[in-house]
Image (cartoon, rainbow, N blue to C red):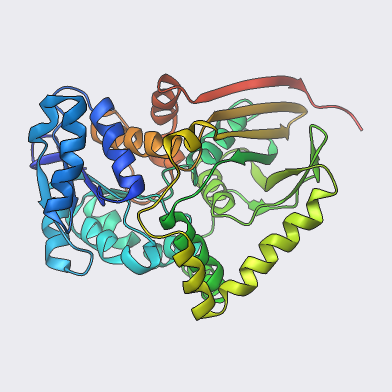
Length: 394
C-alpha cells in the first residue's frame, strides 16, 4: 500500500461539485482528523472554489483546502490525480459512462479507489479490465461504498460472525428504505435498467475468468415475509457483493443468501412489481430513457428537509449449525445523508486505519471489515445483534 507521506494528499474527493459530492465534502470536512491532507477535485475550478467557500463559511480554516483540476475525458489528468493521493473517492457518475478511466488510473498508480456505484455491469467490467493491475500495484478498488452496499455487506458480516464458523450458513436480508433521489442516482438506475443484457454478459464473462470460490456460495430466494410484511427479491448489486465477501472470508463451510426489499401489505406487492416493470421496459428505449433522466436533472437532489425524513433498516436473519441470529443495521436518509457519511468514513478508514493486506477489486468487508463498522457505529449508524439463540425446530 502507498505509505503515509509518499503522496501529496491522503484523500482526494473527485466530483465535489455534484450533489452527492458536495455532501461528501462536508462530511470529510467534519470528520477528517488533524493532519489529514485532503483535497477537492473536479473539472471546473471556479465551481470547486464555490464548494470550498461554502465549507469555509462554517469553518474558516477550510478556506485553504487544496483544489485539483481533473476531467474524466482527460486520461493524463486522471493519472496525475491518482498519483497525487493515497485514496481517491469519485462521485462522478453514471460510472458506466464516466468511471472506467478513473479506475484505470488508480489501478496503475497503486492508489486506493472508492465509488458509490450500484451498477453491477460497471463493477464486473472493472474487475475484468483492472483487477490484475491493481493486485500488482497494491491498489484496493472498493466499489459501492455507500448505501449500495455497505449496510448490507457489513450487516451480513455481523450476522455470519455470530454463527458457527464450520457450519453451512443461510442469511436472508430484508431492506426497508425511504428517501428521495438525485439526478445522478436516477441516471445510474436508468442506465443499469437500459443495459440489463450487457450486464448479464459482463457477469458471465467474469464468472468464466474468476477462480472458484474457497467455499460454495449461492443466491437463493428468501421467505416472502419478514415481521409480518411482504417482500420481493431485490435485484441490486448488494447480493453479489455479499456473496463475494462470504467467498473471500469463508463465512461458514458454505453460504447462501437472499436479498429482499420489504414493500408492506400484500396488496402493495403487485403495484410494486408493475411499477418497477414499467420503468424497466421504458428504460430499454434510448430516447425515452434520456427523457426520464431529464425529469431529475444532473446535480439536483433532495432538500435538507426531505433528507431529514429519510430512514433505512436492514435486517439480516441468519441460521446455521443449529443457531439463529438477527443482525440489524439502521440509520437516517439512505441515499445521501448516510451515504456521504459512509463514503467519507470509508476513505478515512483506508487512509488511516490498520487494515488487512489485500489488493485488487475487493468488497468493504474484505478491505475494511470491523474497522469500518466501528467507525460507522461511532458516526451514529446502528449495527447490532437483536436476536441470538438456538434455531427453531421444524
